[in-house]
Length: 141
Image (cartoon, rainbow, N blue to C red):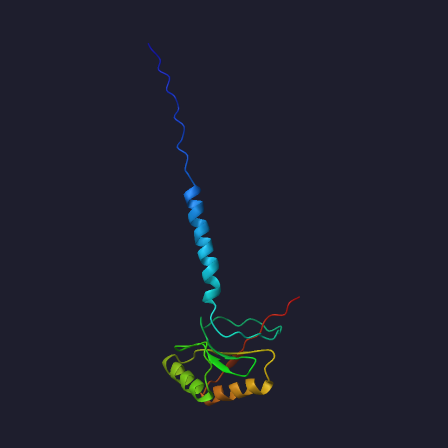
């Protein structure tokens, strides 16, 4: 009887170079687009050891007060354009009429006059907003 020796075939190697190339391209795309996704007004928030709020509402209405005291609202066609007080009140009431109970937050620049933040709070009161949160940065240790 003749014995046939079978040779073991080497396993096919997977070429991972194309996968690495794709991964690096995706990494570059994400690195370029991530800063563009952060929208809003440049505001340097004050630091405070406040507790983090529960995320009941994924995207709250945010009224920003920049260092010059200008007001911004994160909804509408141009969230990076300043709005006057009447426009702010009418936009807030329109949104809250469609989505009652939506949370409203104020982002005030740390160097803005306290009176500008109080004026924004008064406008929110005119829009019949019962609860308002203040956005701060956690302190650095």
